[in-house]
Length: 221
Image (cartoon, rainbow, N blue to C red; front, side, top):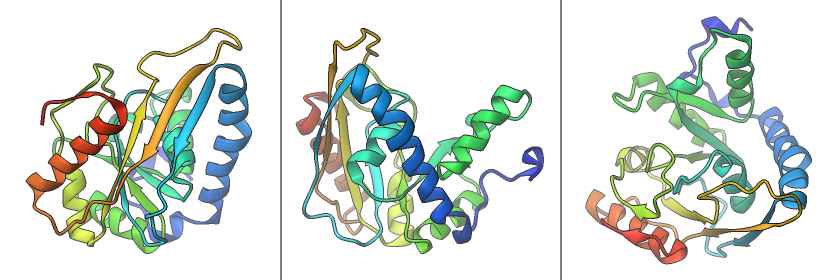
């Protein structure tokens, strides 16, 4: 594959397959968790028994570069990630390496200023492949412990595909810990599904309320 010629927003259902699941498993359980959980962090997970086997839009708050891994771990099911297009650069070897691994983990590109048709079609393919679509409603990383400025794009994809939204709350990673064996506590809570049939305003308020309740962050919505 000539990575420079790839449309990073356009993927088919067949691209989200057993190899994607195996790579996510490898990255999470072989590389990430043994190292970080053993040396630097203690992860506290609260899963939700009301999560069914159907597909969802998974909507976590976003506080660190580790969120992709710990959200995957907490949710416990295959995820495909809508990632900002700036991550998909191929000018240097290092950028190509990052791009390849984002793709292998199930990532695909989105222009956050103007969502393209390729991204919309890929979201449908994700759900067709029985993967769950992960979108961060806050866009970029927010470490200020405030819930505000929510991008409603995640609601569009939920309504278009008629799937409910699962909030996932993450706290404790507002700063990174590099003190060997002095573990920092990180809390991840899988919230209650929010119906896509609610109005946009109701969905945003309910998402913000759950994230705020589970993290203790200030809710300005």
